[in-house]
Image (cartoon, rainbow, N blue to C red; front, side, top):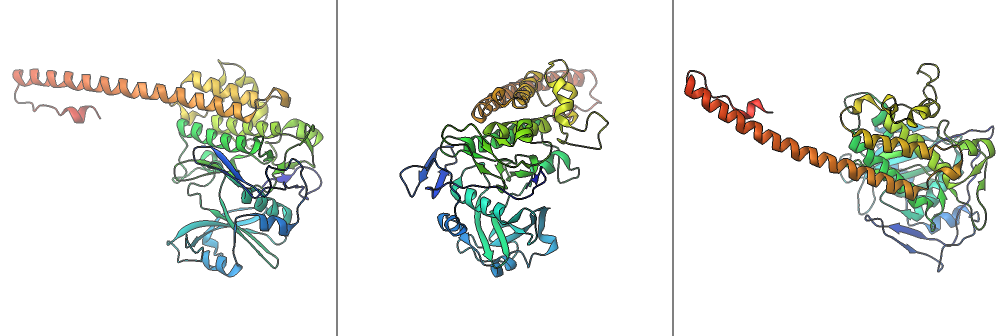
Length: 407
C-alpha cells in the first residue's frame, strides 16, 4: 500500500451501492449481476456488515489460515509492508480448507498489523472493491478473515511476484525482463486501469506503482492492493476532493497541490511506471547522482527529443527493440506525464497505443526471424558445397558438420 503524503494518515474511502458484483471474462467482455437494475450513480458509505454480505467471498476462520500458512512461519513470508506481511499458504481448491504444503491450491494471505497505520478502512476498501470486480488484470481476492482484532485477506498466488522485483532486484531468480515482456506487462496493467476507469465502474486506483503490479506464471499483469482505491466523481463533478495519499514519486502534480483526484491522476502514475519500465530506473532513487534522483524530472527532456531517448533506455534491453517503437513508447509516457491532466490520454487510448506498439514489435520480430532462418539455410547449403569441394581436393580433412558451424 502507499503512504499518506500529507500530515494525516487516516484513509478516506467511499463505496458504491446497488452492486453485488461485476465480471469481466478472459476476453475482456463484461457482464454484471446486480441487486438493482443498474449501478447506482450515488456514492454512499456502507457499513462493514453491508460490504461483507454483498461480496461473493469466502469467510475464512483464523485457525484455518494459521494451518494453511504453517502458523505464519517466517519462511512463508512473500512480502512485507506498512500494512503487515503476506504469507504463502495452501488450501483445498474445492472445500477451501487447509492442506499440506505443496498440495492443493497455493494462496497468498495478507495479515494486517493490528497496530498498522493503514488501518481497518483500507482492509475494508479492498474487500469492497475486489469483492465486486472480476477481471483478468485484477488480482483475484478469494476471501477474508475478520476475527476479533485479526484482519486478513486471501488472494490467488502470483508466482512471479511483483514487477518491482523484476525491474530493480538483482539476482539469479529475477532476470531482467525482455523488451517484449515489458510491453506485455504494460499492456496488461493498462487494461486493468482502463477497466477501473470505465463508465460502469468509475473507480480511481490511487496507488498505481510497480510493487502493486503482480505477475502470474505467464507474465500476465494483475493490479493488487486496493486499500487506497476510491469511487470516481459522479454527476457533473469533475473530481473527488480527498486528503493526499499514495506513494511519493508516482502522484500527479495537481493531486499533490490540491487534493483533487481524477482518473487522469492514475494516468500520470501509469506514465511514471511506463518510464520505469523503459529506463530500468526507480521513480525516486537517492543513490543516483544529483539531478537524477527524480526519474520524471530527469527523463522528460530526453523523452521529448527523438535523438536523445536512447539515453534513458535501459541498457539491458540493447538490441531488443526498434528505435521507432521505443520512441513511440517514450512519447506515450511523455503524454501520460503531462503537467495538466487535460492533456493526458485516457486509459482506453493508452491501451490502444500499447496494442499498436506490441503489434509493430511482433511483426518486425517475425520478419527478422523468417529472414534469419532463410539466411541460415542459405549459409548451410553454401557450407555444404564448399565442404564437398574441399573433400575432392584434400580427403585427409574430414567434412565439417554444418550444424556445428551454424549454432
